[in-house]
Image (cartoon, rainbow, N blue to C red; front, side, top):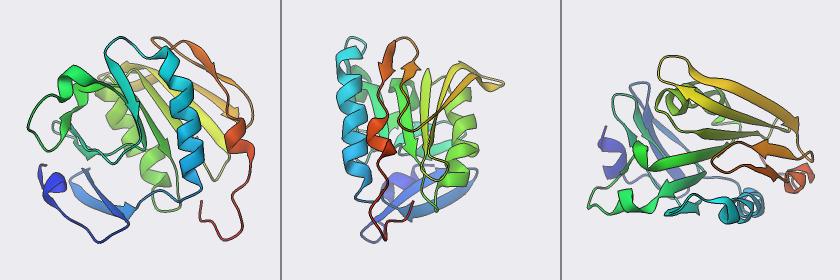
Length: 182
């Protein structure tokens, strides 16, 4: 599994390992940046003590499941103080993915199962094709996420504890400019 952190793909590519496969996909589209920043800014006042929110490229190890690099994450900074190339998934409090044509099936399927079975408290899945946000919570090691709440982009949605606030999704209601791949 450490292979993902050692690979150096061509510019504009990200590498993740899951389902026994090395998955190479393009980095997020440029129009995702402002949307990602909106989510991070809204998360910051509600972070658990000792945590930070980020969206920089970073791999997290999920033992027996893979190495994943979520688009947005909330992480316990104390668990990042190692020399490892990838952080332990136990450091994660929240992950968020913004689907693209290349990543949508994995974001909605395998990653949902991996994040839930690994105990990540909250998974925000921004489905850019269907234009909805799916909030997954209440993780279970055998069933994945037990709670799922879906709202259309532009509607507020409650992010469950430990964050416990209403996330404004209006930044996602603005369509991408022409030529942008969702």
